[in-house]
Structures are given as structure tokens and as C-alpha cells.
Length: 91
Image (cartoon, rainbow, N blue to C red; front, side):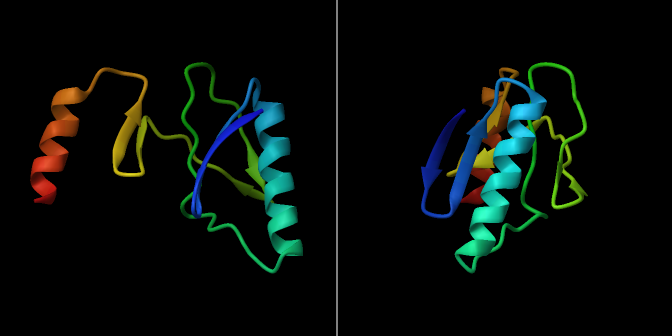
């Protein structure tokens, strides 16, 4: 398992859906132990493979084609033009 962390934003990489589900569930469990909670409405999955159902605390986590992490659009397709337009619209 690999991850990227910045403040309260985390990206988790998994080699399989089973590994990813396990890591996310453990993160949720440990968060609760520390008095924190994961915002389940903000958790999204992106894959370059098959979309297998993943649940955390009984909630199915949705798959998306793209998302924004630390202000940068992330996806598996080359969408630079769309990213440029998104940033222009933010100004």
C-alpha cells in the first residue's frame, strides 16, 4: 500500500480492491479511535482496471473518472485542456 498525505487530504493506492478496502476500513477504524471520522461523502475511487465494489463502514464507495487533489485534476485520461479551462474558470 502506498499513499499521499497533505493535511487532511489523503490518496491511497492499492494493488487490489481487497487491499484497498482493507486499508480504508483500517483508516476509518483508527480515525474513530483518535476521535476523528472520515467524511464518507468525499471518499471516491478511481481505477485503471475493473470496478469492484468497495465498502467502508457499510457504505459503498463510488467510483469516479476524475477528481481534484490539492487543486490538480487527476484522471487516467489526458485531459489537460479541460484542466486548463477548469483553472481559468476559478479566476
